[in-house]
Length: 212
View 1 (cartoon, one colour):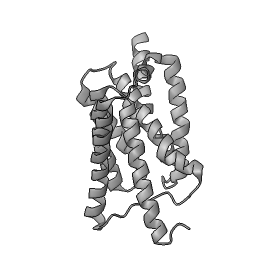
View 2: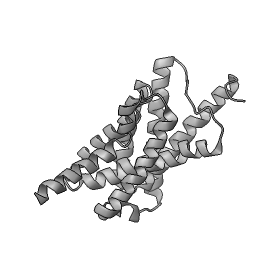
View 3: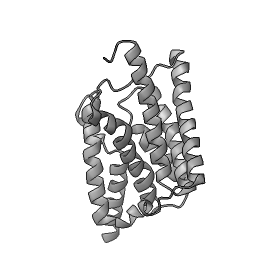
């Protein structure tokens, strides 16, 4: 009975990490990106509390951050690859670089989109998820694949090509993480990617008169 209860908690824990905004999607039409983000942020805090009390060792990934030449190489490489995927998809679909961007200029919204959301997503999908999967298997390919699927599904509220591109992002960021063992790499790369995409979209919208 004890073993079954532990397994039940582990499975629910993994599901919670993989689908932090599932409840929102099931209870709404799934079109409100702002509330979707709020749900994600709220569940992120719940997951951290859950982890702290039941699986404190899963936080071990945050105790080994370092910054060196190899780290820098992986940050640059993963950023270039991820941005190339997005720009390539946009060109194939629209025959030009057409990027959607948050229409608000509020500092809090910009910080949320560019810094906080990437930070939370990497902690969840690369850090915590990989840590808990080690309780089941040591196959790094499984870490990368499952974290990529979870990461892409967390963007299901966006257009389908965005979900596909985020799956590829997940493969790249996941590989960067499992190879370097440094959570700083995917976090920094993700922030750079969002910053570049946001800035390009902002400039385009401003030229078109969409942002005053």
